[in-house]
Amino acid sequence: MLRRRDWLNIAGINVLGLTVPELFRLRAHTAQAAPAASHKGNSCVFLFLFGGPSHIDLWDMKPEAPAEIRGEFNPAATNVPGIEICEHLPRLAQTMEKICLLRSMTHRMNVHGPACSEIFSGREYFGPPVTDEARPEDWPSLSAMTMRHGRSPIGLPASVVLPWYLQFPGQSRRIAGQTGGRMGEQFNAMLLEADRGRFRLGGLELHDDVPWSRLSQRRDLLATIEPRARVAQSQIVADFARQSTQAYSLLENRVYSILDVGQESPATRAQYGESAVGQSLLMARRLVEAGLPLVTVNWEDETKIDGVNTCWDTHQGNFAKLKNLLCPIFDQVFPAFINDLHQRGLLDSTLVVAIGEFGRTPRLGQFTQSANTKPGGRDHWPHAFTALVAGGGVRGGQIYGSTTPTAGYVATQPVTPADLTATILHHLGIDHTLEYEDGFQRMPQRLCEGVPVTDLG
Image (tube, rainbow, N blue to C red; front, side, top):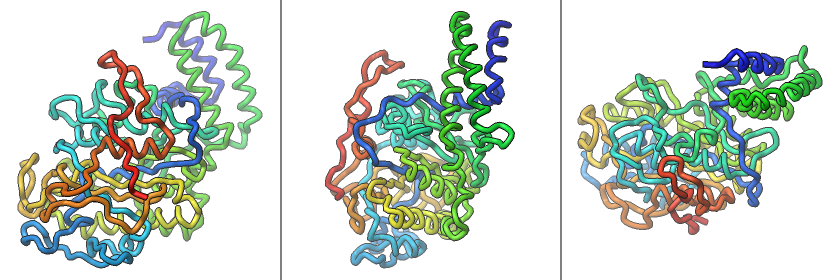
């Protein structure tokens, strides 16, 4: 509830041309970045394959295993001798010289939300896995760490998430691990929302009847109001003033032009396709081209509203869903993105990581967590799974790590979520041993306890 004086002060802020609800949305989706890191130029695009793709059916196939393990798909040769992947990923196969298959990812959490938290934060989940939803005591996400400690390009935040925050249908809160958590919600990354691949950017476009010069005058008028608001000691007005400064930065630096994928040629847009993830990766390329350190792209497809087989979750009909929906989308957008970065000279400085929260069970119909798993499906399996890594100095055309003959456990070179997080922070020039004040336990915490994987080059 606001006092009458608060509303009178807020009325002055409306001269910005922003409504109170818009300002609240800005408050929810932006944060003040820390001073620029000393490391300059590097970026990371983190493509999160929500639901957990089946590593054994896609990029760590075991053709010699029994049928109930190897499944229905056949391995196919890539353009790198000795490396084979799923037959339903032909474009990816022809891009393998730029990609490293990191087959030795491993952790122990087999519930979606807590497992997402572990991948996003690089920390073991703090409590029992009884919910998929975010809590204030969540560990801070990689995007929040970058928001706080990453360099901030002119007019842009250091970290952006698109096209949605992951959230299961019927749940009131987003899935765990996507926020600033115990570091503080003020470090949440900026969210660029999209509906079916179309981004909602109208509030960032300067209109002909309100050019920057006129908007600048409104900003000056706001400056005359702020001192009176501070005297009134209205925290909400102070918050609005801070967020309006950030909004002005987006407008003044013409960020809308960066975020307008409509400026891309029809040929480029066709390469990425019209899927939500395709347009999101095209947006990600524009953002790293503008110097943004971290872009998190959360996978989105038509099954995101399915509470049983959401996105890459395949408890039922594993092979049909992979063949008819997931593989065609991934096989178009991911190679297009990698090749586009390469052609524009951005791949060397941009680390690309594609990963889910876990893999799938080695044996078809095996029950580990969900009673919805059917004989033609695979359940959750965190003990061994694959990350696709490219760019950022990583040598393409290689396999890093290996799994046992059933793809059930890591055999060599294990990599934990903590190690992966440390590797990304290292690439971005952020010291993973930096400490912050834990707002939940009231004690200093390191950003990450992992060790950067330095032998991928």
